[in-house]
Image (cartoon, rainbow, N blue to C red; front, side, top):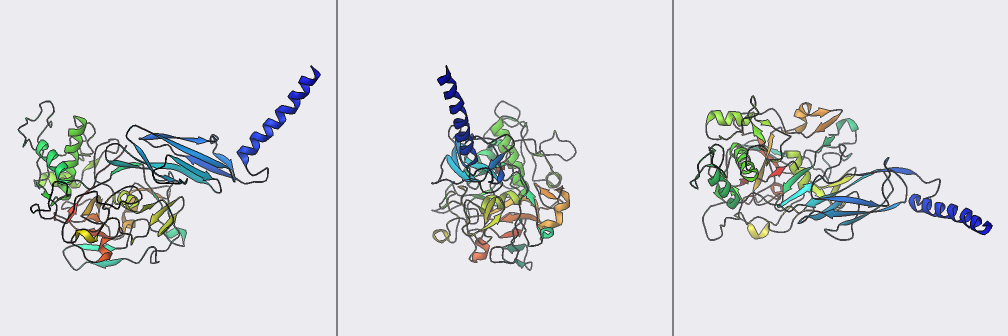
Length: 436
């Protein structure tokens, strides 16, 4: 019995010491940092080995392996806060050296990518006017105003000048809306397919569109196909199409986003009449719904500039965003016309044509300086999910982002290009997002 007791006294302390050494990887004097694991809202789950303590405190030098278990048909795009040895890897590793948040961006099985921004507001000390964030070029002499190289995530050496932005997770489409998808929803919503409003599988009420849409840049011609982006659609019409697509997808209006300002039970369906456009200009945005919508300018720019490395990118704390001069998409083979959506290369999130093909409309009313409307969205020193300035009826001053097939100036083919232009054009299209 004595020998057995001696064995126990020897074995337990050694096991305990080895276990603690593995978790701390730095000894008693090593620093302790906080590691936060943010689970995706949809698309899969993430596990950590060794597990992260409830308080998040992990010693410096600890190596943690994170593994995504994607849902069926979903795929890991890249990691935030951890590194992977190859593209689309379900495994990311982290050697703890600072406070860090870890999450993953996931390609969903419906043509969208789940984007998980940092939990906390992010900003940068990089000055606007540097090589990384060049000074804006402004032209307000024509029928619209455009600025290039002027993003929404302002930084500065003085913390008081920095714009601290916080975004909720969202899903964004990999491609611009095609004419094919547009026409399918349009015909359903307008009952052009012979349906009867209110019957099963049909819209509860008919939608009234101000624009029928066009196939790509010219609608006709040997190179035009239904997989070119839809164009010649106004901002107002995009909003009701989003409601129609939501109703068609969900089999009812329960998830529609754009609703009457005074009666939130009313889903907006009219972009043709003065009354309909006015209601859309002041639409209530139901953030509790999961329907399709236009991206905010901040959502658009974050997705367009997101980078998994520091190459040609600006540091925003836990993340990197590409320079505002970055061009996302292939330019040279498609001069003078639109092309089918999804032409490589994609950006770091797997999104195509973010700054070429067609200029993409955002939901935001336009401010030359986006900070002018921050007071509408400020919470505890942060700007939370900004959606632009005070609404206006005509929609001429809603923000457009990125370049298009008609541009020859490389400055207008960058993710930093932003413009205020309204109405419709064969150079403008849109991309969908939704709250998962």
